[in-house]
Image (cartoon, rainbow, N blue to C red):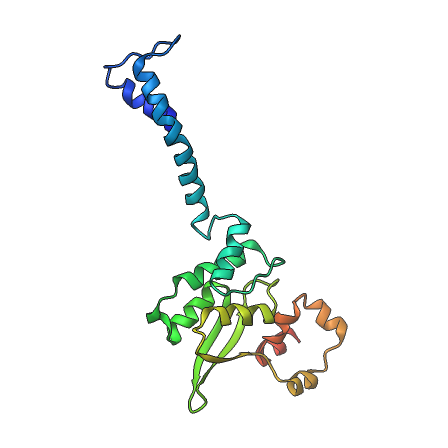
Amino acid sequence: MDCRKQMYAQMGSLHLYRFPKEGRSLVACELESYLKVLEPMMEQIQALKKEVLAARCSEEQLTKFERMLAIPVHKEMELDKRRAIVQSKMSIGPSDFNRDGLERSLAAVGIKASVEDAPGSGTIVVTATEIANSSMTLDQAKEAFNALIPAHLMAEFVTGGISFEEFDSLDYSFAQLDAMDKTFSQLEMMGMEEWQKEG
């Protein structure tokens, strides 16, 4: 119910005021003066409520969120995936900058990965084993991860796939690779077991 209908319905329910169908009573004139201020204000509140959440805001507002959170803006990426990255970064608190927290954050944006400390190097190693969204490239996945971690934290992003030498030993033809119907990113993350199953 809009502001006008709600106000007249609630005032009318008191049975103290008359709202004639023709002409205006003094009470109706007073209510109209209030509505001159209330209606535009309610419109602004509704617009704000729509734009305040990344899950349902406009694409323009989503881009503002991404820039504010230092997340790379990829217009070609699906909006739902962009929203998930923004929401994931917004959900991270100082107590989440640990192995479990980072893995949960990555899972929230569709990247299945393990996070491990590399003692003595001052870095962490993130091994991605699966990207849920086939349209997300490895570079985009890396950017999404880098947007989630603190700026001071050094990280190496690797895939859980096989080495070039291992791939070369499989001796796959281009026709066989095409028949697998997978993106390059998905192929790059497949481990030896998966390659052997496909063969």
